[in-house]
Structures are given as structure tokens and as C-alpha cells.
Amino acid sequence: MPAQRSLRWRARGFTLVEVLVAISVMALMALMAWRGIDSMLRTQTGLQTRADQIRTLQAGLAQWQTDLNQLAELTGKPSWDWDGKVLRLTRRAVQPGDGVLVVGWTWRNDPGRPGGGDWQRWQSTPVQTHQAWASAWQAAQVWSQSPTADTLTGQVQIHPLSGWQLFVHRGGSWTNPLSSDAVSLNNTATPSATTPDGVRLVLQLPATTPVVGPLTLDWIRPSLSSGGPG
Image (cartoon, rainbow, N blue to C red):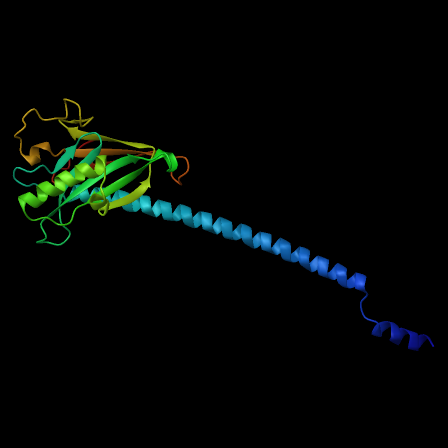
């Protein structure tokens, strides 16, 4: 009877071809979904990496300004020294009573890094005696030229750089700190006389970083009057 044939047909279920087609469709949908998720994860990872690099650069610039703001003027000791390779600073320690810190900033050439090098910072442990300061001052110089295992303990990688430049503000204008216009002819000048009124930092950021090209940051000595470097 027609009714009995209809019941038998409904009880037969799916054919093998129909099952294979359904499995193929589900596999295709799963593959498309996986590709979409993978793309989203890659994008999220890339954005997170960029954000981390920007935060690291911002932290480095903030530390640069803090080091300059905390320069310590010690009798007979320089608070500032730039030899074209490393900037050495004598600054106050974080905790009052801990004495001073010797800090070094440099750009270190490294062909294996983006842009060919890194902006780096070095810091000594707090020093409270003239002898300890002299040792730390020399260690900053050694670190910038041929770092040892001991000096590397105070090093922090800041950000990839293609290069950097420093300019100082003295006598009403910006100039290269190694030029005759920027260097005092009096070798016995006090540290306050050798500390510039302002420092201009120019970083060359490589194309592989979130921020690309030259980045300029000016610092003005806090004790300077409102009519400072322009």
C-alpha cells in the first residue's frame, strides 16, 4: 500500500552519499571558522606587540627626563658628560639618604636588531663615597665601549634605534655638545657651569617599529627661569 511504502522510506534514514556531503560541508565550515579565528589571533597578537613597544618607548623617554630632572650637583664631580658615545649622569638616588646614582645612556650598534641597534640605559647601585662614585663613573664608560659581565647587570634595553643625536642649549642657542661652542674652556669649572640649560634628544626610529622616523624630545633644566630654551 502507498502508506506502508511511505513509512518504510522514512525509516530508511540518510544515504551514505548524504552523510558524506554533510561531513564535507561541516569540515569546510570548521576550516573557514579556524582560519577566521587564526586571523583574529594574529591581528590581536600584532596589536599587542605594537602596544607593548609603544609603552616601552614611552617608559624610556619618561626615564630619560627623570634622570635629567634629578641631576646631582656635587662639588668637584661632573653631573654631565657626553663623549659622543655615552651620556653619563650623576643623579640623586630614589630614596633620600641613599646618596647618588651614576647613569649611562647609549646607542649600541647591533646588526641583528631592527634598525641596526638599541637605545640602552645603565645604572649603578647607590654610591655614597667619592671612591664609590669614581668606580661607578668609570664602570659606565666601560659599559658603553666593551661591556663586561659585571657592568651588564645594570643594563636595560629600551628600544630599537637606527641612531641618535644630542644637542645642548647654552648661551641662547642649540649646538652639538662636542663643539667648541658647547664645551667650557675652563677645565676647573663647577658642575653647575657644565650642566646645559637644555638637552635635545633626537632618536631615529626604524621602519619595523610602531613609531617610525625621527623623534625629538627637549628637556629644560628645572631651575631655569621661564624664559628658557626656545
